[in-house]
Image (cartoon, rainbow, N blue to C red; front, side, top):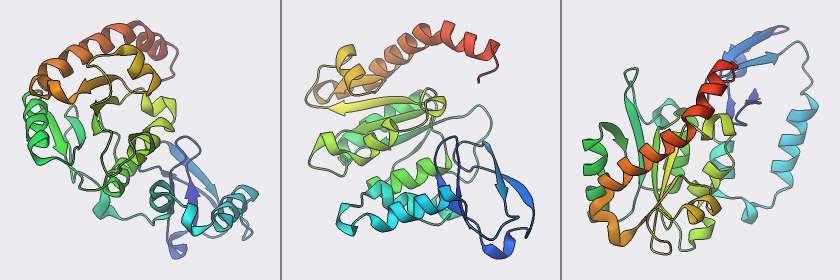
Length: 230
């Protein structure tokens, strides 16, 4: 059975033999931990399922993106980035293809007490984000692509449900924009811009960016908590 989470739009499959026949049942979305209610009282797929399947079938193979491929993949526990993470431990997804730059960024993140995973390909990064909401994503805009405006990881983050996205601090590594350019960050839908020429100061820049972000959103988050929206 194909399941789609209405909150974050993640898709996953469960074996038919594990579906309670003729019953309603619930499960937890592996991406956002939202409760998903499934009605198995009818053998006929819902119209929304038909719509999803027909749209996938009608899309030419050449037009399918990496995001489409990952969305269509069956749940595989081996794609989870961490076997176990203690409560309160911060996690970071580092998407940087250059080994030297990756080492410098990892050092900064380690000093900030992040538990880090470093996918080799965009598809690996997307699979990991299906099962874990990272506190930090550091993304080189040319990770897995020659065209920085078509970066699949960036596109995936851009379409996340806002209730999930606001909890992820996204840092874009680039050679096109100035470090801490707030207007560029706003236009690219990220929290922080870091120019490659400033990579040696990545820890200091990240700490400053996170401090500014937390100060800016402190009142907003308090209001969300007070109204029960988070």
